[in-house]
Image 1 (tube, rainbow, N blue to C red):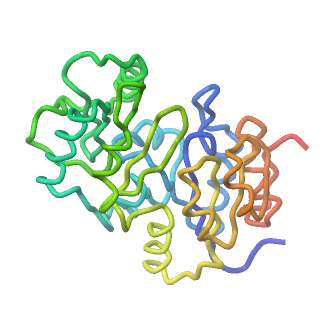
Image 2: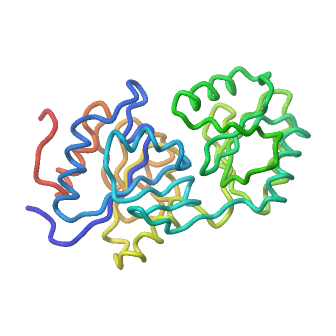
Image 3: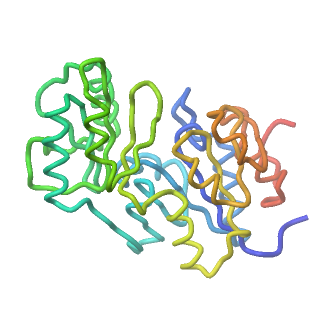
Length: 273
């Protein structure tokens, strides 16, 4: 039986809608989201990715809006609902601290991702640089330049990094999310996937009970602890398990379509029984 009231659905990207194995969105998820929108529900990407990194993804699936960079930049339709950049002088200090504490950074903003000009001593950074470039989101401006601002950043540490010293400089105004493998996501305080959800609900006059979140990894924790309806992908980080209200299949096993049907959000069956 189809739900009568409008729902707002919030999807993480990597490992939730987008397969980390084949880098595609399953056709079942595309059809499930299309049906949800036809039925009057609202669908949003809620991602740690900044907007430029979502450009290739937008060609795979249509959404009503995009909550980017852990809530630092929000687009609804063609409208820029919210945008917050790190103050310029603070950004310059972060760049100096990255160098001082031997931490590699990836500065992320509306125009793309900024890396050090020179080849990094960390192979992982070069791997990420190549991936970002392949997605068309590598900024022509390096970390060393000061003619741009950014919204958030990620960083990578190794045995030579003074990560405690560096993170100490961020304690007052950033939340640092451990993504595993010495990879860290740094988000300005007062911003998160949860706060972004509330901004959307306020914009449309919907209640928290009307929101459904779909995710798989630790940077989804704010929206899982906040939402009353939290859908956990079959492959996921264990930290999310205490907050899940429904556990679905993996991306490759049509987990999105399966959950949306099971929860009564859509009527169609777009997966193998």
